[in-house]
Image (cartoon, rainbow, N blue to C red; front, side, top):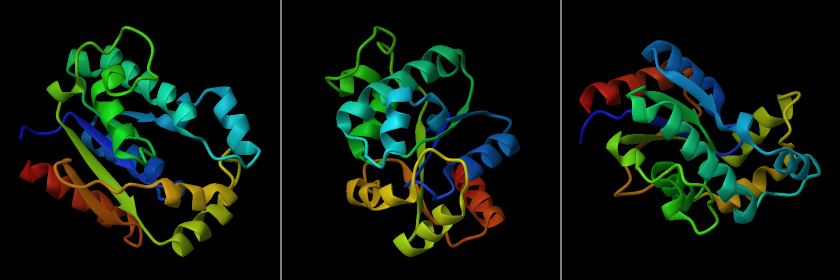
Length: 187
């Protein structure tokens, strides 16, 4: 497999996706996107009321993210780090392949595939207790800690044939970054 052009930093809320993704992008000199910045206002309001998102909420958002990545960056050769929960395999497939992977995607951008730019999934995993403790200390985020259990319930950890590594959130940030950098050198 060719070296990845897109790093997807995934995991449940509070796993450190944004922190790890931004640090990786900085060290690699790649563009960084935080998927939370692209949630429609309706999704933010729903989560703010303590209601978990469902596929009908998430799929159009993921299709939009695919289209943004493809049209803005990947098609022009820009390498990208995306922090996104991507809890289910279908969600990761949509990010990779766009609307052809999901019946609820709309729009025409996405006829090409991100598969031209190989994807490496970085799954930040940890126990409910550890991540819940982090969420309780986080301020000003639209995702309330009460929704964490619904994310664990939805989570489908990556598995073969997906191109992925799993890293424990118990590691310190420099260790997580070093693990990813070592993995990229082997690709």
